[in-house]
Image 1 (tube, one colour):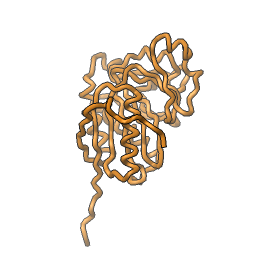
Image 2: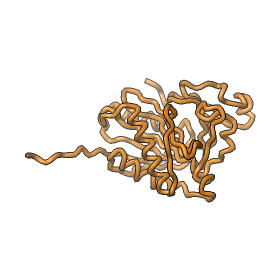
Image 3: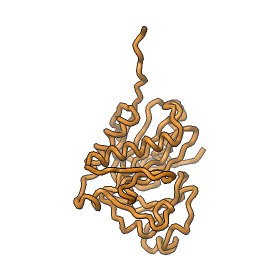
Image 4: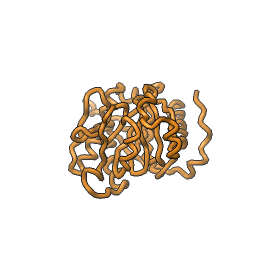
Length: 237
């Protein structure tokens, strides 16, 4: 009887540092098009953003508590996002992960894919002696009822875009401007708030990469982005 041959799946990951939201969208779009064109390798972006608010397809501006004019006075941009979920904050001190992956090739439906992303975050939190949990019907990861990681995805032709944002040393006061993820009175936390000390973002990235590879049974391959600003302009198909 022949031995079983396991399918090796590769994922090229990039760590470009702090990237403007629109540039991150352009990167995801480029990777998405490569997947549609037949690229077998998956992609993962690990980065952070300047202070930014995004509103998902199912979101409502009523969850922006200071209104668009108030947000503009503070100098914070608000972007409509073609992902699930409501309004959220993205900013420095977060680990933002954008996987561009073929769900069909992995025989995964969307709920299983979300579950696996959450599992990678829960494993990461465990490396810092923290116990993450899920709340039914609310994608993301919580610690004792406070949300530490938001998850919101776009799936087009069974290939993922957008992803998750894990609060590491995030300025949590920015969440007071919104109902986080549309949850009125929702509480948000971070690794720093719980542990009482700064955690190097690179250390959290390394942990997340390890658990991401484990959960998705991936071989991770580091990639290099020379100049994000040289990416072609985004145009929707």
